[in-house]
Length: 265
Image (tube, rainbow, N blue to C red; front, side):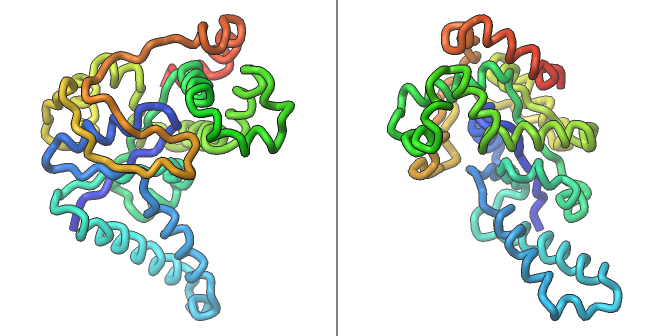
């Protein structure tokens, strides 16, 4: 059986880079954005059927569900890789940590985070680069799309960013000591040191990654996912703090004040 860990955090926080650096280690299979969590979520409905309500002890049904998830998730990767360690990436995991730690009490969770000014700048630059991707969002409420401030507030109130921030805030309150926060700024500026801290957290031997030659191990389909762009550069470079140019200085300062708790993780 494989050892399974998880990556789950904020969008536009270099999670794709993280997965591909992890995959440089020949012992690690790091997934692209995965649907394994959703399969488990759907399976929950089947364990709510009448047959499973016949248990004298309701906890027996819960135990079977957890056993099903544990075995199913581990075996799901058997046909994909012979690498002994899997790091599954899905932003939904951080919203279901109680269940995750019940099923995998030994699990490690890597949480990619980033200065919120950088995340919002990334969304705005993506909108400028690929305006056709966001026509549907704009049509829903054209007036909320007229300024960078309104668009940013929109990002913060809807998926994928809004729900990810709320889930992160809850996870920090209740599970902070079990998580390892991977700051995108640190990962891109000091990739070797950042990855060494990750190997230590995963309780694995340190493996020296090569940030000057990062091959794309993961593969994601971008169609239908407007917030995509999961292609990485083969050379890791520090993130450029260009939010004053993209968001404006005054609004950037407001964002920092509201979300500085993320930078302090």
